[in-house]
View 1 (cartoon, rainbow, N blue to C red):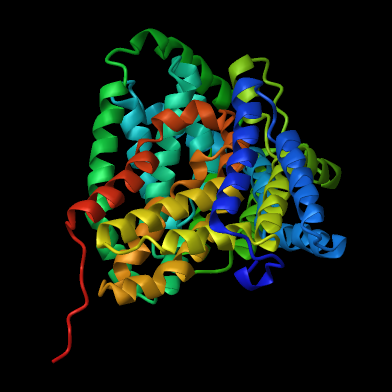
View 2 (cartoon, rainbow, N blue to C red):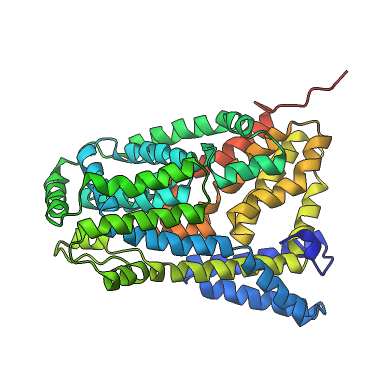
Amino acid sequence: MHQDQAVLKVRPIEALIVVFILFVGIGFSIIRYEAVPHAPIALAIFALMIYGLLKRVPVKDLENGLVDGAKSGLGAIFLFFFIGMLISAWMASGTIPTFIYLAMEAVNGKFFFAVVFIVTSVIGMSIGSSLTTAATLGVAFIGVSTALGLSPAITAGAVVSGAFFGDKMSPLSDTTNLASMVAKVDLFEHIKNMMWTTVPAFIISAVLFAFLSPKQASANFEKIAVLKKTLLELGLVHWYSLIPFVVLAVLAIKKVSAIFTLSFGIFSSLIVSFFVQKDYGLNQILGLLFKGYKSNSGVKEIDSLLSRGGMESMLFSISLVLLALALGGMLFKLGILPALLEGVQRFLKKVSLLISCTAFTAIGVNFLVGEQYLSVLLPGNAFLSAFEKAGLHPKNLSRVLEDAGAVVNPLVPWSVCGVFLTSVLGVSTLDYVPFAFFCLLSPILTILFGITGFTITRIEKKM
């Protein structure tokens, strides 16, 4: 989707009114009536179609807007299918159960949420994928927190915070590479500059998670022992069950494309599953990949934790992503998003305003379109020349794009990341948002640094 695809020239104030009405309606429906986002977003699309018809936009153009928007999410949709298969295959191969067992071995109840945050941060940075980290190690920690009787919402917040810290600071991350590419900054210079806002956000988050962690959780450890015993009795805990994770990590480090990385992760886990699941045949494998893994241990917590994954489990998420991206396509086609960007640029007369407007635009794109990549691409393209005119080094722009764009996406209930995380972690976006400290702090710090001028680098003028 590009701004030059717009078929209308809309005034910024009119675009603002349209967007306000649409998203107040969507937000009210989701929060007040606890509606699934699909119907409100579908109604918003219908409202935009009526708006377009009143503006005498040809029906064909409106349809193209829907299709163009949906097309931008095809890559994410394929990833959803593959991650769904990966989760079920990792269940069958014992990969996730082994992670759960090891996590239960390592966790003693003290500083639990801080441990979750730090471990997911390290794993996220090593493989460069927030969603993969959340879908694998995150699922394991959710299971441990349930067994300990701890808050799944806080655990999910710690998982999301750690996963997106790791993703943000990893040179393997798509969004990190994208932000440096859009701003035309060296990748490692971009990562180094992000440390000014990222390290404080990390430290504050770790302290908050440590503070929230229970001082005593020993009363629940008998239950942990039962769950560990059950996993061992099911024959799901083996050292070789970690081979699929090693395969995934190595391919990610070598920067193999996500689809191929996930494919080899699935294939290797299916091979391992034949050694773990003695009665598995082709019929079971095919059913596993589509319908997910089913546990019948008789222990409620274990069955609830392990019975997940499969392509079918992603259909809810995929349908929502398609609707959200189609809505974004309509907003582009009708010239509403380009008008908002144009309106914002008129007020960029101070460095503090420039950085704040860039940050709020990135946040706004996340809420308007729900797509992480676009929250980096659109503001990056829109404000690059403004940063140059202000004499600011482009690494300031790339930092803002990550701080207020990439890491904000999981905070939006109808976004690609928000929908995915809710699906795999089993915790609604609105429940974990108050505890996703790192994702909340990052945009605040980048705006604060922009206002104060702290760590803002200017381009040295040549003599």
